[in-house]
Amino acid sequence: MALDIDVIIAFAEKDNGSAKQDLGWVTQFKKFLELMLFQVLGQKPNIVLKEEFDSVTASTMDNAAVLVAILSKEFIESGRCLDTVEAFYKATTNTKANRVFKVMKSPLSSTEQPPRLRDLIGYDMYQLDAETGLMKEYADFFSEEAERQYWMKMVDLAYDIHETLIFLREGETNTEVKNIYKRKTIYLAETGHDLSVQRNIIKRELQRHGYIVLPKQTLPNQFSELEKMVKKDLEECGLSIHLVGSAYGEIPEGSDRSIVDLQNQLAAEQSATKKNRNEDFARLIWISPNLKNASDRQKAFIDTIKRDVEAQEGAEILQNPLEDFKNIMREELLESSERVTQQESNGKSIYLLHDRVDEQAVKPYREVIEKNGFHVVEPVFEGDLLEVRKNHIDNLRNLDGAIIFKDKVNDQWVRMKVLDLLKAPGFGRKKPILGKAIISSEASSKNIESFKSQNLTLISGDQNKALESLKSFLSDIKS
Image (cartoon, rainbow, N blue to C red; front, side):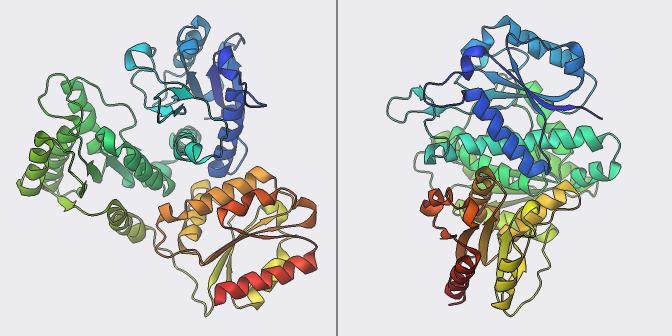
């Protein structure tokens, strides 16, 4: 499906104002989403801003892949914003992909949200003051608070939009792509409120490795509808993952069991059904080792999981630190199906991150690294977009040291690579990174000082000086 516009961002006029930023909130959001989508797509996306008083024609709606609605009180009170949502739904009724995404600029209850958007999974992009519980705008989009909330959700949104774009471009006609996805679909059960962040981290990791994660919509609050949706999703999967903590979870209307409990029961039934059909279906259940705040009902549920043969159908049950569980999950999923054949080398490996535009400028530095006995691993620029991203993740998982090279590329590109290095442990690394550095040409070195706080060695200056500093850095890694 050929569509000229990748993303339309619909928003209320007041939501793009900011007293603390040079750019408005929505303009900043568009800028960051462009960066994230560029990372996963391998090309700059075409993103169009649609403010409530702009006129967007029906033909424009027909020509757009995705609509992102920036939800706030101003948005839901604007008839024009709601009309934009309706117009997009009307223009895209014939496709199976999820093409509408709701971004929460401020907290809104389910009943406050437009009925059209109520059941969609939301991407919460607001900051809550820990002391007062009140919402506040981010003064610094690269602060620790923003890293934990804003950027985590931005990564989620970018990967989910990427999945839709790939489906629209290839999914209807490329059966090979659909079959790959079919084999790699995982049900990651909804959790109690105490484990929502942990679930989110695992979801992102699975998506980075090419897995489709279900459910894609908020589970209904009515039991019969919930049961139907969960059964349908489980039928498409070969594995379900369940995280069980202190919170029993919400109980849907028409049931006396929580959503967490019901998903586990339905997955056990699915395991038995597929076993009878000689189909594979595995379950991983993680129980938190810290249950001191668990209610009596939650403790009874956990005891049932541990003792009941039916509840254990096809399941591996683990009660260990979450990091250990994640390692086991990686071994079961990622390393078995995506094991990397590494080139054996007497020396260690250095991942030399550079952009295609700097291929010539980086050559002298590559030669010095190789002459010092290191195996140089470089990014892949050609091939399938998913494979390019997978190669990058595999390199982050297996490198000994990392060097980011900056010449013609901009500071935002460097910042994204630094963020990837900081998140490398989440990709499945089993050893520490021995050294991280940024090499910057003399002409582009003025802005790299800001990365000192990220435990990176900064190498800059004229080429001769930079090469000597590089040799010193490599010597430290060797020792």
